Structure formats: structure tokens, C-alpha cells
Length: 326
Image (tube, rainbow, N blue to C red; front, side):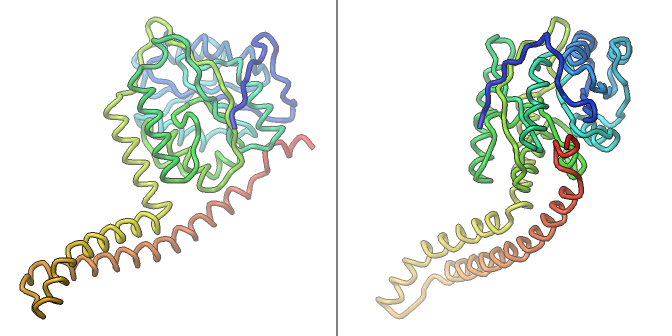
């Protein structure tokens, strides 16, 4: 479900004081935008602590962020996934707001997203991007987002409207139970699959998405990062739904073996002979591999079920969002 969010940018958040809110901004060479980004979240979430994690910037990102009032820390391993892993491990809060430091996401939407997470006890609220400016979102990225969102829905039977959005609000139990494995921009895909697999309560809010300010450039490579995202999605499909993955492979092998066996069976019925031994041997091998694939899927599905139970227990070890208000 998507909810339109049109908060008043001039009014600060009504988040209860006892709820600790952390704004997390991963940054790489964002000197032109980070100051305004920090100021925007400072105005809309005045009680929140704003953290800027610098990822080896070669410009003045650190100095500008610190001057704007953010707590600045550094992650040396390059890649957004590595930065998110460090932020989630280091920061202690009840609610986490994550956005990019390039001023493309609207800070005015943050209070409504935080309030929704607390009121409905959600573990993740995704800011679904709505853009009017042509330069805000390249056409190839729009198409890629739709394709990957559809693929995620096909593989996992559920999906989000904007699977690649970097504007998200998390509960503490999401953050502290999420085993970050990605290194780069595929981190948003991994987050989405983690929430879907554990059947967490989530929602989406439509938020404005603007163009980068002058002097700020995108670090996303359409083809390289698209290929990495596809690999992560397929790898997570293999590890999270092994019975479907290996069972489908086994079913295809059995179907191919049956098609190849039709001429042999017809010849055998007519003559009582099997003249094409190489084909018969190939069919036998395909059926054996198919049976092994089915067995592998069954075994790995049991292992995955146990891993999912452990992750669910780690997730439940933390309080639900909003429970600290009562």
C-alpha cells in the first residue's frame, strides 16, 4: 500500500522525545549537497542525531557536513553496502532514517514516515520516489527499476513499488537483525528481500525526488551496478528459496529428457530396439541430475528454514517500533 505524504516542511517532527531518532547519510564526494541535506533534516527532525558517514571523499564533504552540525564518521571500505553495514553496527537508536547526501530526497517527508513507523509499528517505510524534473531520474534507471521490481515480485511473490529507493525509515529490530552482505548499490535490493522473507510489517510513502544540485554527480553506473544487482537478486533467490530454484532446474531437465525420449520410445515400440545409445545415455544422465537437483533443493530448503528461524528470533529480540512510547 502506498500513502501520499505531503507534510509541512516548516513544521518540526512531533516524534516523542523519548524515542531516539538517527538520520543516516552515507556520502561520497557530496560537498555540493551535504550541507543543505543536513540542514533540511535538522529543520524537520530537530530532536534527531544526524550522522554523515564519509566513504573516502576527495572533496570537502567532511568539513561541510561537520560545519552543518552533523556527527561525521568514516568508512574506508568503498561501497554503499559497506557504509550501511558500518552505520547499522555503530549507531544505537530506536528509529533510523536513511537517505542519500545528495539532496535528491525530500527531508520534509521524514516526520510523516517516522510517525507512520511508530503509529503502525512498522519495521520499514520506503519512500517511493515521484519525480517531475527530467534530469532527476534517467530513463534507463526508470526502466531498470520497473524490470527489477517485476523480477523481485516474480521470484518472491511480493515486492515494493520502488525497490531501489534509498529513502527509508527502519525500526531498531530491522537494523539489528539485518546481516548486511552487499558491498555496493545492491544494498537496497538486499534490504527489500530481507523484509519480504521475514514477512516484516512494511509500508510505502510517496515522496518527492529532485535533481542533484549543480556540482553533484551520480556515482551509479547503469550497466555495472545493474548487473551486480541482478546477481545479488538471483543469488538471494537461490539461497532463500532453494526448493523453487533447484526444483525448477530439475523440472526443466525432466521435461527435456521426456522430449528427447519420445523418438526413442516410438522406435522401441515399432522395432523393439534402441538404436541411438548416446541419446539414451544422455536422457539417463539428465534424469539422474534432475533427481539430484530435487534432493539438493529439499535439503537446502530445510537448512534455509532453520536459518530463517534464527533470523526471526534475532529480529524478535528487539522491541517493536512504537512500544517505547507506552
